[in-house]
Length: 85
Image (cartoon, rainbow, N blue to C red):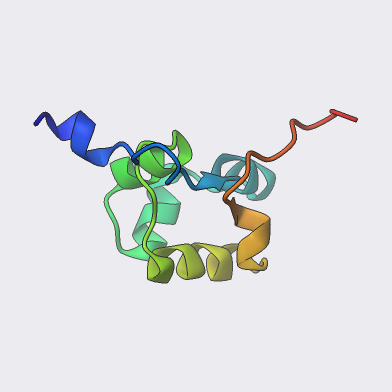
């Protein structure tokens, strides 16, 4: 099995996130977030693209980094698009 296929969540297991939005709002680069979390900067990219679902521990650390409840950063349902009514 290719590495790409192993990273992709199985159907129904997708965890949606707002990491890119939170990073942009706070002016934080992928590398800065990765360094703060102790992960590789590519991991942040995989998370943002939905190619990798975070562990509970990592999801909580990301929410803590941005000082938001975990539900603000992650959801089992897609987040509404900004500006959508």
